[in-house]
Image (cartoon, rainbow, N blue to C red):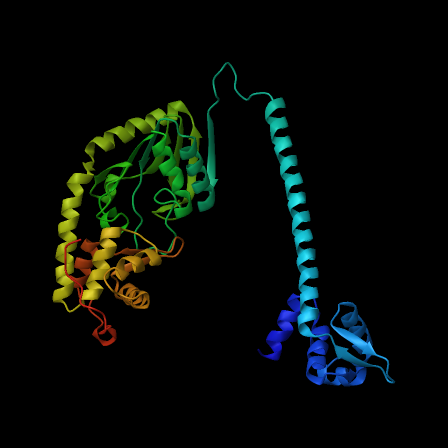
Length: 399
């Protein structure tokens, strides 16, 4: 262990920098005068005696009855054991005090909440809740409100959305995807028997949703981007959340209109039902997307992409948007090492076959239709100069 590492560990046990250096000097010199310790440990002369007195109080050194006085180190096992016990006790007492203070604050917050909700008059009049409309800005606020609506849902959640263009560097908006840590709320609502219907564009498969999608919510799809001109969420025909277009650009921004109004929600619900009737079911969309992935994988192979490169693309098409560790786990089943999967992904991102979302750190394929268009114009070509040649041969089964 280097001297710097030893000093760092001694400081963790409660010694300061000069004390740590002095103790190491004593361990090396066995018995030293204050002047010698100051020289060896690079301690200012004016501080040496203070440092040694403190070191003795902490149980790391002992003065000898000599003239001039000299110092000897307390054996490390004895000194460190005693110091460890005292530091552990001090930290545990500190943690206990923090816990007690936090508990007291939680109790105070709870008492305030219960008191206010009990004593404040109800905001409703005549048994009817008043309509509320408010504007939300920033992605986090929109996602928090959307999740709150879903969490409170009792019977129905309807959603119209459209997948973002992968070319954008902006994080995926919450009208399309919520953080992985919050998706539990959707499944909790399904377990409560809340009916969920998602209407989106067919191009979300297999880029965002993989070819194995099939679990609730119930899904329907429209083909053209212009078929969906707004994105919104309706809950229990009472609460609505509408994504607003950015007035400075043709796209959507992180601005939303939240409403708690039965009248407004009914208008959006009627619109949803009309568009839902026009949508194609998942069973109608999946076979077409499967064929498209098979054809594009064949085109990639013909153009010189390696089997493992094609397998990464095919695997992501099957899984949809996933984190790096999930993809590595799937590729490991095909005997591809994690580091090789990482290298492949980096290369395929550069080549325009894979996209990585910066906010959620999700990997997803570029849509097969876009890949085919890019190959026809020569924008996607294999990088034969950097291909991994030691990877195992992978079978070319359909996704």
